[in-house]
Length: 172
Image (cartoon, rainbow, N blue to C red; front, side, top):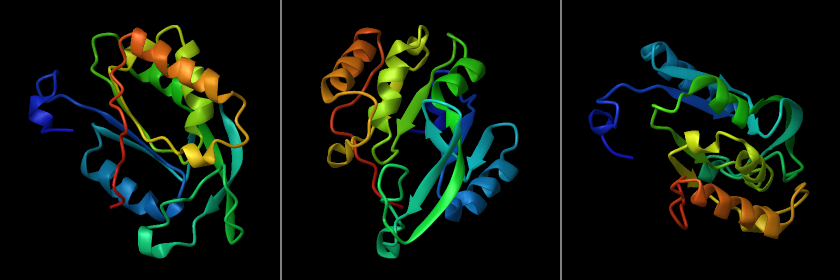
């Protein structure tokens, strides 16, 4: 993403870190403690299109840092209930038009629900760049069709949201 000093805001930044898998909560809390004015962590919380709670299945694949943990796939081993944060509301309440907003979406299939809702948000243009990791093999149980999802991405791009093609974030 580049050095923070090269941010359009001249190095001023703020990050909202949302991760449903509680194994990462201590690391997120440490980041918030180290940078309390910049980092807000929502550990053991799933990013979604609405508020509520959901069952979250922890991927048993430790070798890949449990990378497939998801609210959309049942791994059949370990499930936990987690609260949901509404991504659109998070953006609406914490950004202004003058901000440069980057949204990283790696939500193991929930993108097929979140992106169509984001496209309907009247201020979707608040997002300048969206790094969208698409899990096409997980397009299950979505409230939207594949065509509605594709139309939503096109709508966001027309609104000025930069969405690089074929984004993939490597597991840390």
